[in-house]
Length: 214
Image (tube, rainbow, N blue to C red; front, side, top):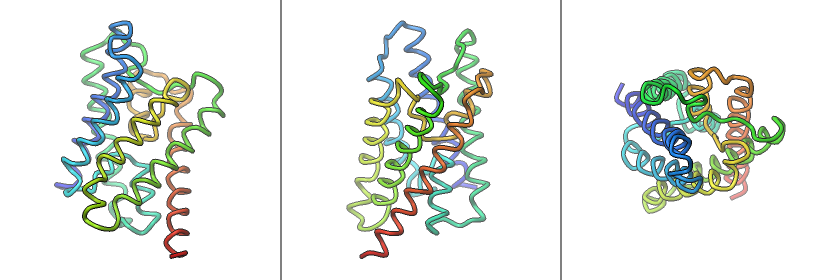
């Protein structure tokens, strides 16, 4: 239960701070800025990794949990409890933001600025590289593990910085699911549920190939 509660709290923090930054940026006509939103996501991910990494592994993302399971680095029996905890944390965060900003129409949701195919491909590639970094910095020496939060947070910040204006740079089904459901903007939700999982699994396959080639 300690692991599940850590996943709940970590995902809550990421969705509350990250999508909260988007909402506040909209409410203040750019007071946070696009760079500020990207930095918020990267910094809160980094902070939660250092806070809960030793307790739960700091997934906070169903795609990451599935990717670790696919790599046989995570027990299959814990996939559903982890994902349920992540989704619960995301929904509670969005409901709190809905209470605070009831007039906001999207609640920080991810919506394609261009075509759905464009955003699908972007989300796939973004999650692919994120998962590849996660797999490599979470395995190996203790020194590598110490740098994991910085490396992963930096990748989230970087990808949100350049791809956010087009696809939202979700890379996380839980992060996109809760604002879409609560705000009623579900027309493109399938992109943010399927593409990150596919990207994570593909990254895991690449990681396995590299390990076998050593």
